[in-house]
Structure formats: structure tokens, C-alpha cells
Length: 257
Image: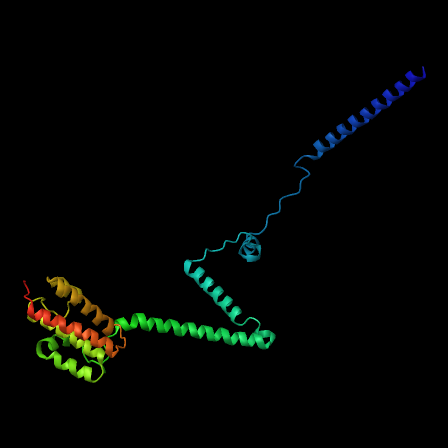
């Protein structure tokens, strides 16, 4: 009997709790519906147009800023400035510490840079400028327009002997080669024109022996003259013997033989 009474008490309490919760929901809904109307809302405030425009023109309130893409030139300038800054940092690294070894390292770096610059200039002068310049005036005083005059009007054997006697073997080699061209022209092996190249003359020679010897003579001449190398007496004597032998072969060989 006591158990039934307790069960009845729990049921009654649970019912009362549900009743209270339901009553609360009903009251909240009624309050929400009564307050959810346009009557109780505040009025919309209209701002003056001039005030809005002043804010729009103020960069501090511009939250949508766009960055302009850099041009290729600007990117290159930025990259170059960055490399210069890195180079200066490398060059002057440790100098601010006032250490003797850091100053010594700076001196070595400067000497290294100067040495590289001198090397580049020397290589440029040796392999590019030398091939572009004409023969020195104090050694030959000859240019392409004078070659034809020498071949047609001068006794090149005398000029060879004079240059050899003076020890100017480089100039003597030039006269020897011009003498070969003179005999090739006189014996109708080539049609001489000063604007032609040695390759052009070689293609005009039909005799294999003369063509082979002329190929050697032209390579030797170009190496000595345009290469601006100092020619020793023994090397000149060897070349002179072959040059003179070629001239004798030209004299004794018919152009169409």
C-alpha cells in the first residue's frame, strides 16, 4: 500500500512539472507575438549624403584595396637591387666589427674583383678585338686596298728580303704570301680580286698539289698575321722554304695541266 502511494506521488509531481513547463512556453510565445510587430521598432535614421561621401573618400575606411601588378622591368629592377644589396653585404661582411682579419678579407675580396675585371678585359682584347683590328701601321702600313698595288707593281721578293733583314718575320711572311698570290694570278690559276678570301682562291685552283700547298700557306699566313703572334726566325725559315717551293711549282705547272 505504501508503494502505490509513493508511485502516485511521483506521477503527480511529474504532471505538475510538465504543466509548469507548458504554461511557460505559452506565456513566452504570447509575449514574443505581442512584441514582434513594426509598432515597437525604432525609426530608420537617414544620414546626410555629404557625410557618406566623405567617408567613402577617406582611405582609412577603404577596406578593398587592389595592388597593381608589377611590370617586367620593375621586377628586374627589384631583382637587380636585391643582388646589389647581397653583394654589398658579402663585400662588407664583418667590417663593422673592426676585426683585423675582417679588414684583410675585405682587401682580398677587392683584389679578387679587380683581377676578374682585368682578366675579362684581357680575354676580350685577345680573342675579339685582335681579330677585328687591322695590321699595325708601324709594322706594315698595308691594308686591303694596297694588296692589289703590291701584287701588280712591286717586286715582292725584294720586300721579303728587306723585312727579313730587319727581323720583321711577321711582315716578311705577309709579303711571301702576297708573292704566292701574284704568281697564281700571273699563271692564271686564280682571278685575283682583293675582296676575295683565301677560301675563294683555293676553290679556283684545280691542281691538287698546288691546292694543298696553298692551303698550308694560307693557314700559316692567317695564323701569323691576323693572330698577331710573334714569329721566331726558325719557324719563318721553315715556312719560307715551303712558300718558295710552292712558287717554283706554280711557275713550272700549267694552269690547265
